[in-house]
Image (cartoon, rainbow, N blue to C red; front, side, top):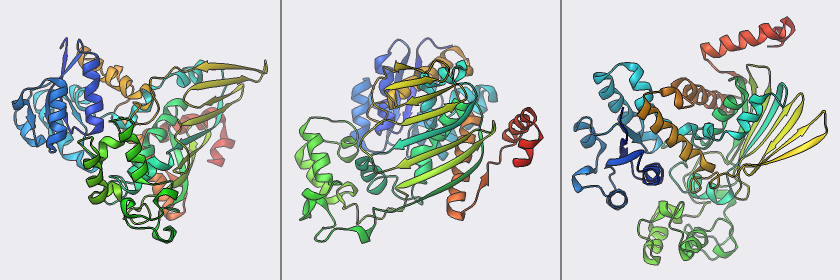
Length: 422
C-alpha cells in the first residue's frame, strides 16, 4: 500500500482545487501529481500550487486517461453533467487491472455525501440518549445571494443543463438524514416551485444587467455589489472565484458586463425551484420534513430531532439536548472548522471526506469511507422519487429491494397494526 497516496485531479474548478488543497495541508499523506482542466488559468493555478511539471497538466481528461495509471486515486471534480464519462473510463481502467472489490474503494465518487463526515450529532443519536427517534425537521437555508449566484445565474440554474435543485443542493441533506436515523426513507411527497426569480417580478426600471441598472442599489440581488464588495475585501475565494480568474476590477467589470453572473436575476433562463419541502416516512416508522429555501440569510443547516426521551436541536455551531426526565439542557460546542458552505469546507465535511478517502486507499480498507455505492444510490433515488412526487402530486415509494427488506423487519418489530397502516 502507498505511504503517500498520489492523486490525479480531473476538473480544477473550486471543488477540485479545494479537495486537492487537502494534500497541501497533509503532504506526508497525499500528493497531487497530475491535473486535467480545459481552462488554462485554472489549470495553471493548480500547477503552481502543487509544483507540478508542465507535462503533468492536460487540457482534456481523455489525455490523462490515455497515459494509464499515473496515480493511486483520481478525483472527478467536473460539473454534474460531465461526471459520467470520466468516471466510467477510470472505473473500466481499474476493472481491467484488478478485481471489483478494489474498484469500489479506489474509484467510487464520494462528494455528494460530505455531510456524513460531520459526526457529533450522529454520535448522540447512536448513544440512545434521545430514545426512539419519532420525527425530524431539517432546514437547508440556501441564502438569498447563494441562490442568485449559483441557481439563478450560475451553472445549476436549469434542470436540462445540470439537474434539479434538490439533487444539486440537497442530496447531501437527504443522505445525511438517512445516515443519522440509521434507516432509509421508504415513502416521500414533495411540494415546491420557482416563485420569485421570474420575469414578471422584475422591478420597474430594471435593466437586463446589474451594471446598466437604474435600480441596482435597491436590489438585494445585485451582482455588482456582492462581487465588488468581495473583491474590495481581497477575498479571492468562492463565489468570486467562479466569476473571475484574475482578481482585478477590470476583469470583474468584463465578467459582469458579458458573462452570466452579471445578469439581472429576473432576466435569466433559470427554471429550478427556489423553495421546496420534502415529507418522508422512514423504514423505522419515523417521519421527517426537509425544507430547502432561497430566502434566508447566510446560515448553517438547522436540525431538530424528536425522540421519546429527549429533543435535539442543532444549528451548525452548537447542539442542544433537552432531557425529558431531568428537564435539563446540555449545550455542546461543535467547534467546526469553517462554515457549512463551499467556501468554508462544509463545516469540516470536505476535509473529513478527503481524510477518509486517502486513508482507505493507503490502507486498502474501504470501510474507512462512511458511504459506498449503495448509500449514494439511496440518496439519489430519494431525490428522484421526491421530484416525481412534486411534479405529479403523488406519494412515491423508493424502489430499493434492500429498503423493502429493512422496512419489513421494522413492521415485524412493531406488529400488524403498523403493517396495515403502511
